[in-house]
Amino acid sequence: MLNVVIFGGPGSGKGTQSVYIAEKYGLFHLSTGDLLRAELKTKSALGQEIDSYISKGNLVPDKLMIDMLAGVLDRERPKVKGFIFDGFPRTLAQAEALNDMLAERDTNISVVLDMDVNDDELVKRLLNRGLTSGRSDDNEETIKSRLNVYHTQTAPVAAFYKEAGCLSKIKGIGTIEEIFGRIQNAIDKVK
Ligand code: AMP
Image (cartoon, rainbow, N blue to C red; front, side, top):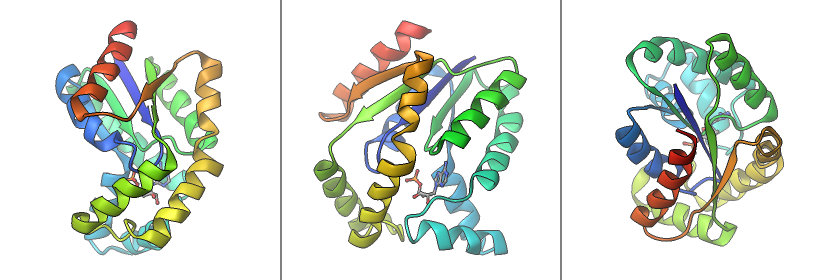
């Protein structure tokens, strides 16, 4: 299996690039943000709990995320060549759980794409996206808190993958095509 993690701050292009990666390599696009927003739409009790985290820019608890991910992994695995994990892992506990979940299924992470975009550019992109996204978290206050959560809780996960030797830094500034070109180079090296 080809299992790719796309890693980076909010607005670093993870979702956009994941669509291209999934299409080109035959992978299932597993976006935890999309899964959570789908649950939110159902207005279930779980959806309301999730909303209380997302709208403040906080992370949803690890256990909930890991259980959600395992379910999708088992449902989709027989149908695809691998996964592109978009927005997961966001904590060290999630990274460790993902390693374990993949090992239990006789596979592993092929490469982690670390999307490198500076904070000023991230804020600019998210505010711009907020004009049309309808997302409760694309506003100035929540963007600040998402960036803070990214730097304190998520960015340290990069060191975990660097240590494991599978981290590939990708310059995340440029046109969508230029960035996708860099990503393909990184994936083709490990395929
Ligand atoms: P995203 O669409 O990836 O930007 O995610 C939107 C929001 O969903 C995040 O700000 C978090 O509140 C929540 N979320 C998404 N993925 C995760 C995750 N792996 N762990 C915890 N919370 C998550």
